[in-house]
Image 1 (cartoon, rainbow, N blue to C red):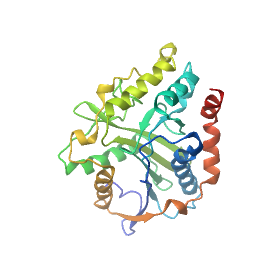
Image 2: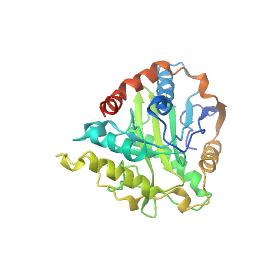
Image 3: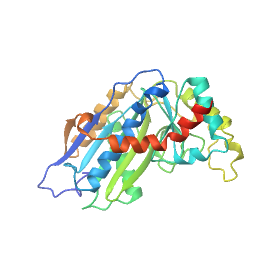
Amino acid sequence: MLFDSFLPSDQPLHMAVYQDIHHDSHPLSLADHDQLLTPFAVDDAILNAINRGQFDAPLALHFWPTSPTVILGGMDTRLPNLPDAVKHLYATSGIVPVVRPAGGLTVVSDPNVLNFTLLLDTKSKRLAIDDAYQLIVDLMQEAMDAHNIELTVGEIETSYCPGKFDVSIHGKKIAGIAQRRIGHAVGIYVYISISGDQAKRGQVVRDMYAAGRADLDDKGRYPQVDPDIMRNLSDFTAITSVQDFIDDFLTAFKVNGVMVENREITMIETNEYLERMQKRNQIVYDILARD
């Protein structure tokens, strides 16, 4: 089983599960932007608690689809013309983007894209970077086995946020993965497009990079996004909702001997980490304040 090495076999392996599924289908205003920052604050709070030995489970799983937004990576804040990229998103879609702490490049989020984070305590079991990526891919594959779907892993260069562990079906990317580590606490971040207009999501990123003059970057760090290279999971399976995937994914943990314990987000103290996210996103607020 996938988690045999995390605890001695005579102990049950518990996982705290947090589901934050109630989100509007319209972009949030600047005044409500903190709602988009909160999932990142939750993950950082759990990671830091794990690293300090103050979290009472070796595993946590956080599901967090959001209202429509664009989530920028740190590299995106170095676009040749970031102000125009941010203003373009706001003017054309009403989107106030989010600058995230993990991952390098832009992804799109909305209620039909499932974001989730697997958080692990690796103090007693070192987990190499690639091994952590492979763990989440293996879990996703187990969830797909019931649908007779084989996932392929490998970079899709013309997708948004391309990476070594892009997840595809028949050559079309459906998911991307990133990591964040704090001491012996590891967070594996995944987005998977479940349904909706995936071509439009790709076009949003393509147009944002055009507005931000990504073509002027002399290091070639930004993808030339092809909106047709990505698809939804619902294009290949009977999974048509975020909840469908959540149910299948949790089953993959249970068959690997993990005991699932549902918890409330409100149990987590996030103020300190929300303030950090607000500071990280000040660059966006300053741009829109000048407009």
